[in-house]
Image (cartoon, rainbow, N blue to C red; front, side, top):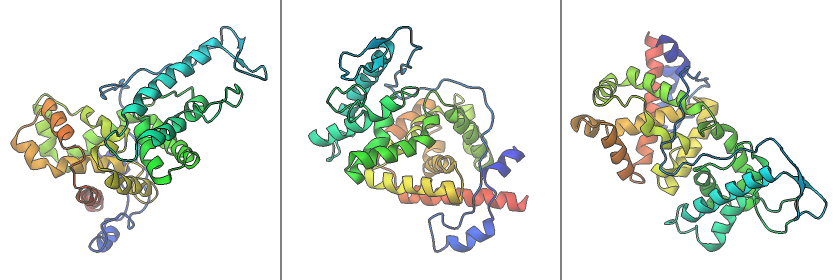
Length: 312
């Protein structure tokens, strides 16, 4: 546990406290590297509609694509894999942020195009499909990726810029998806963090069905809290997470997750919530959180941990 505390944050709390009164941001933080705790690998899949994604199989045979004008060769297995990914994209695009004004008609097509490719350059099939998935068939499309693209598209309203930013974002986020191991690390670190900063809540979770596995945080970590907040708050929260990588912690999302729990601490404790209760509660609270307050509390939690380190 001691090693975990020192690995979570190693900044100078006195420096941070000196600027805290006049700044609720994270500009006073120094850089740290949060080392993930080792934990057994589990296949975690708590989004209701998460589907197993297909991977390109080794080429068993090769054929000349009938759609190719230059004789490009694509295996049937590769084309089938791409087709399955397009099917998943189509389903998710149609239901992505349906209640948000931007996502109608033409803009849904933009979202689809970012997830797919402008033109299959080598296939020369003459219609817009599959940028990201075609170039990343080893990863494929997984549910939740549309949620990460959508806010970027709203800001840029440009497919090329959105795609470029999405690819850069996925360099960090891809490990959160089922093929990566970041989610298990998040859960393990959350368990240690709450034991240190709020042992009473940890004991409640442990004694009421033991949901200290923190699977209820899956959607939070997978999408950087995108489904928990209204759009304007998503942008503010994402910017803090991105900035925190350089000045505070590459895992600032842990403090945001704990801040969400602490925001409703009294409700959780007084109602002795179990795993089902807490999932239902946070599903009902989606897009109703005070993001500014949660971000401020997350920063306070970092400072608390800094002080623990300094006063040890």
